[in-house]
Image (cartoon, rainbow, N blue to C red; front, side, top):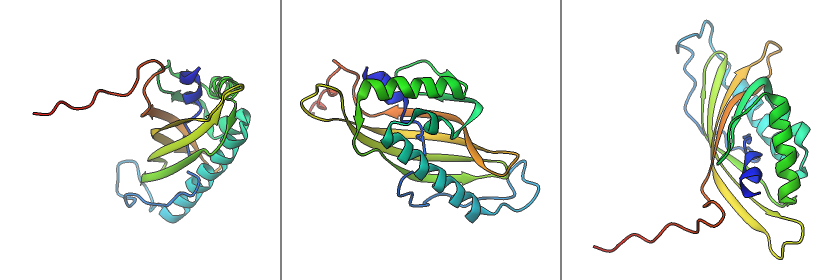
Length: 183
């Protein structure tokens, strides 16, 4: 159940940043594949808006809207699971995760870095949230990091083509890591 819950975080990406700070490496329009200068400010604005809208969808438990930020042929790599290929599989994974975790209380993502190219961008960030499964006495928490590979679409929009989500929480039953030994 916990592993399924973590799947939907891509995007959070994901995925994806509510309150995006716009921090990141400067775009370099001379990078391979760039044929014209990149409007870095416009790309940052578009990805920040997508991140913010993704966070809203995630907090609502809206699997279809959360998956809409991915390309049709996207691949999401949620923690502790096999990759999910295609927007439909990502939506299905999100729906299962939302059902398993119950109410999402406060999903947040923060962009740490954004490297912009002519037709793609690489975003690195962190996420955190708590959730309250049905019948649970207390909310549970998760946090971790993500990497989103965004691709510019023919209509000029930006969508996630690949993502990787890494939870910093131990697997159920694993417990916290042992304390370092003193020398």
